[in-house]
Image (cartoon, rainbow, N blue to C red; front, side):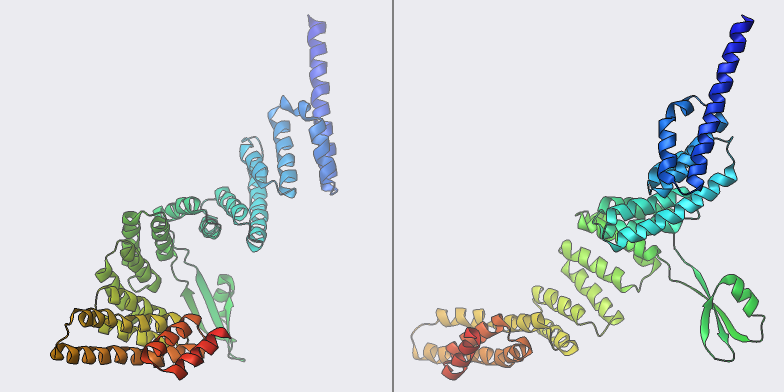
Amino acid sequence: MKRISFFTLLLLFNFSFSQKKELRKAQKLYDAGDVSGSLKLLEENQTLYENADGKVKSNYKFLKAKIAQNNENFQLAYDLLISLGEEFIREEVIQQLNLLSVDIVNSAIDDNNTGDYESSTNKLYLAFLIDPISNIDYLYYAASSAINGNMYDVALDYYNQLKEINYTGVVTKYYVTEVESGVETEVTESEYNLYKRSKSYENPRQEDTPSKFPEIVKNIALIHAQRGDNQKAMTAVKEARLSDPTDLNLILTEANIYIQLDEKEKFKSLMSEAIAQDPDNPNLYYNLAVVTADLGEKEAARGYYEKAIEKDPTYENAYMNLVALVLEGEKTIVDEMNSLGTSAADNAKYDDLKSDREELYKECVPILMNLIEIGENIDAIKTLMNIYGTLGDSDGYKKMKAFLDK
């Protein structure tokens, strides 16, 4: 029995010695820059480490994690580092995880630049998982990348996580002005604390970046709206507006949801509010004109179309919609003309209505001519050609036909 026990002990010693010897070889290859050779050696001796003791197995996992990181197999590197037991030096694991986080983010940036948003999203989220407190910004960037990749379910999940912890992303920036040059420069916090006591610098100031929380809740609302869940969208956007009532994007988001709900009066009210925030935006006047016209307020709608054109004289849709709005009055005139009889009074009335109809056409001519001058709009040319034909203006008709043929 003693001989058997001694023999078994000797086998275990040799086995343990072989494990450590091969692991040292693999480590030397890795340190020398031969990453593929190191990995090959580990794979060839994998069975040696399957039943290794805790310390040897942890060293094996640690080396394998570094190799995986070097080969940009970030998920494997993360899984191996996280699986290391307490017997391994925690400081080394934390340091390696920090290095892994940097590599992951740099790779995610490269993916984002090449348009591989899915890969970028997954990497940024993995970087966040490495340290959910210090790396919380990466969760925000992962959500943004998911939006770029049309991964709306993923983005919604990440944005909701950010919302639950009231993430703001606010960063304090520090500035000092050099006395000699008068130039203000952004500096680090430690530099700021040093420079503000120096006579070479003046006007030290701190400035917080805007909170990202309204944007997060706005995006939650937009995703719900995009998925057709208007009630959840409305709840989210109202919550966002409480945090920033004057945010133009939030106002427009709420307005767009009301349009989807066919609540045009509320849309109109919000668009008026948006115009107060951005009075030089022609799109706001145009959208307000469209809805106001739908509500039957023709004169108000006309005023908004004209305002849109005033703000942007090249706004082709505004010109065309304004013409369509003017010509809407034609139907009432034609219906009344068709209802008349053949009496002398009716014939006189008919002539008056015909004159009114022609006035509508004449009113559209300068609007269409302005539009044609902008860029020879085909629809405008066809419409004006028809108007000239109805008015009996053969010269005008021929001119428009020549435009059209060209």
